[in-house]
Length: 157
Image (tube, rainbow, N blue to C red; front, side):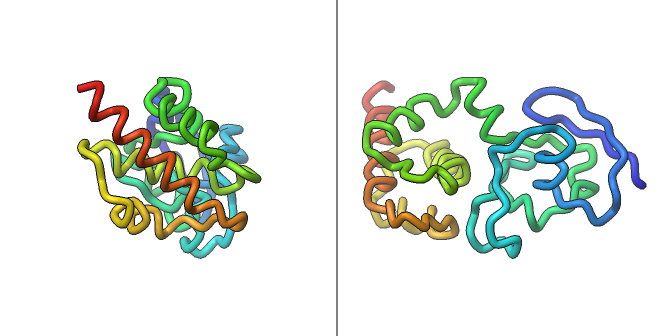
């Protein structure tokens, strides 16, 4: 077992983990943060997306020990702070949720794009979200929701 200390959603966390424990498994099993899902377990589907030190990563490809000393933000934390409230509402309004399995990863990836400001083109939105799979084929509605949020944020400035 290896001792790690990190910040998760603004709260300090210390734990003993096996060296092979993936970050997403640690978040789900040890901390009860189940928003990040296990999908492909190869970093392809995006269901396990979280932010580590400000950058989005695939939680199934990052070991918990690699996050030692870092700051992790999950969908739960982003929701609790209100950072993505408008984006979540747009997903609801545009029916971009469907089954919901991909939604946390999609929201985190979309917020990563929107944090840069401006209104990205629909092609840029698709490109940025291309690493996140939606098995319900809700891509058009998801792109609509991200575009709507970008336009609303731009208009509010």
